[in-house]
Image (cartoon, rainbow, N blue to C red; front, side):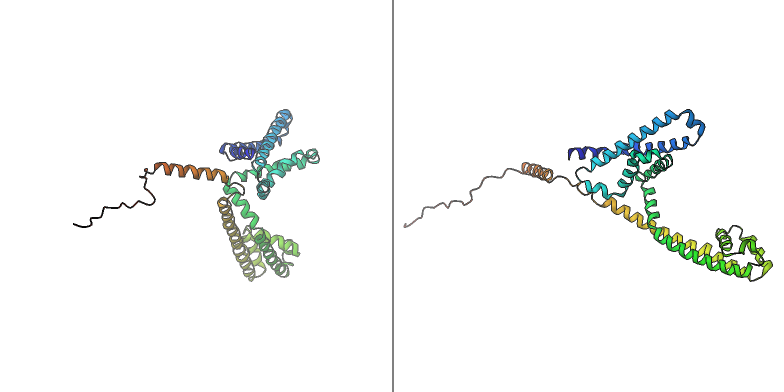
Length: 287
């Protein structure tokens, strides 16, 4: 418990988080430098030494975090950020991973995502993105359905006149997908008006449905997930950490000291007998 307390003091210090955060950014900068072949060849040993120093620092960080939960091991594995950090750091010591340069670089790139641990707002955004995935999947299904229906209508109406854009369902879907951003919509409407005046109804309804209605639905899904992520983060901050309660004996000792101080501050009361004796007064009998 003493080891856990000392590690907990170290990991909860603001300087600890700042050092780890700077190390993550420095490691990301090293990865960027390695993309330049000239610099990577000239300073290969220096870059490799800096990478080893970052890895040693990250390993020390994980040891401290594991030590902080030595008295409550389950609490460490309940935190998904701890599991993510442990997987990213421990993968660098796996022989198969160290031999695969591409996989090792991808895992080193995953270290950049660890900055979300030290940035609450970024952590909320990542949680919101994760919670919005089910709603986004439904949005993609509805969007694909709308795109397919309009592609079939476009193929029926414009396949003979404009085979380059509507010669098949695949080409029609690609054309309409590019029109979702409204880029090139003016040229498409002009080309459609040369074929039929009813094409304005086709393009206007598609632009209204795909570019405005569906996009607003997606924005609503993301905002709803963002609110849920913010509530989850607030509840996590308010929830007590399991095993972090103060010791019962320490609380009893504190209460005893408080009672002693209160008793010492009270005025000394005069001693009184429990049962006062009755004094017999002489009786005056007779004259």
